[in-house]
Length: 289
Image (cartoon, rainbow, N blue to C red; front, top):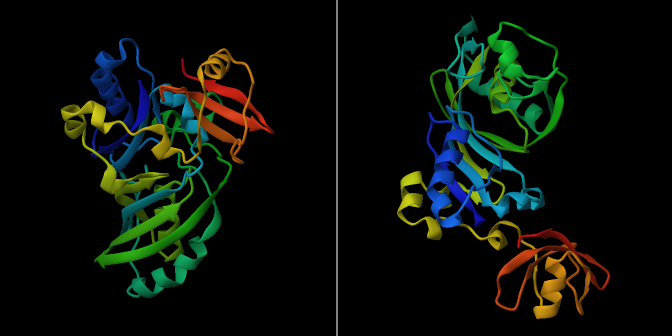
């Protein structure tokens, strides 16, 4: 088993639960314990694109260069919560300024490019061997160093009273909850993130995603081959060279592509692994057989 799944996750279940469901769905075709890897999980209350690597494709996750994310969310002004989203109890309240539209437009440029974010206490970041959310549930608050993230673009899609609809393009590791809280603060009030929909995660996009029922109807057709996810060239090796590559030996190739990494297939076009080009030599980096 080797491939990716572009899953549409509804709000409610956890990313781990969907990984377990896919493992059960594909285990019969894999013939054994199936490895499952996430390319960016989603919080339970969030919906949208949840890319999952199956089997040996988990070893390809580090090769995915495009790690940008795209979201649509709601920012609910006037109420801050302990979790930064709608699931948490009210932490504090504040009036929404009458000129909120003007304040929003004036504040948006401050959230463009590289910015610093303090990870929320209700997050999976480690601190002293424990997850921050474990400490938060115990009533503890600890200092968290800021992290640099990149906001490629943020725009207001509309407003319904105190609820603002936003579209955000950002780097991996961006906390949309924190972005909502900080934007509300910049507008002179407080706020929290309401609904969250992930429209894209790297090369995985919403309009190509599939529900679990759609995947279960045709599991084989739902598999996305590695070449569609990682745009690197493919090199085909003949019998002897394919054997050497599988054994972990460097092979000499004429007219190797200029890219650092290539997919390697044998004469039957079966995917053998990923090689790294070193001059006229091809060195095995990931072998799948």
